[in-house]
Length: 166
Length: 112
Image (tube, rainbow over all chains, first blue to last red):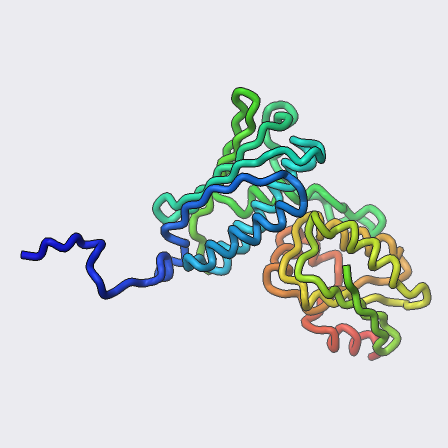
């Protein structure tokens, strides 16, 4: 009778997540300053970690874009450009990637996150929107978003379930 | 931000020599494009072939460039990589810009 634990058996050792494209085994925790430069580095680092863990290109796109939008919002609105701290944690829950992002800046206006309605693009050139896309992208590229405010801290929970071709 | 500027068939082609147009680079991008725009070019093509990532700040900066050029000078985009193309389609900004597969098709069209 074998006494070798299953996980310790040599042999087949696939890249984690390679079969499902979901970055199985990803678990990370980062603390960054909410500045555009730190955001750029952080989102590229998260993308790199997920790519090495076998995440599909479509998921990499969604995670990189949504994290960039969320972190930029925190830098601009919650901290008003003061570059406060942001805590980011990511882990897999089954097939879905769950990311929690916390900051100690100002609460969202009205205590709720924006709905994220796409700005109207059927307007003349000079009235085309230069902003207002962020929350639309966050909502459209995630499967669930939750916001809470407690004891001076904003917490945003993001869930990325696998999508076909992504 | 580094840009290359060329003239092809009377069209000014501005190539963005950076891999990201994001919140950290959006203002520098706008300033750099404004500095190289040829006042006499009837049309400008922005070559995004080197750009792997655009966020909403980068998208806003590209819209700002279009507005800077004004209604008389059209801004078209060429050589969008898949993730950049997706951001334009998701925000329906693909309906605002002319989008071409590569710089050649963007400039040939103008000549014809």
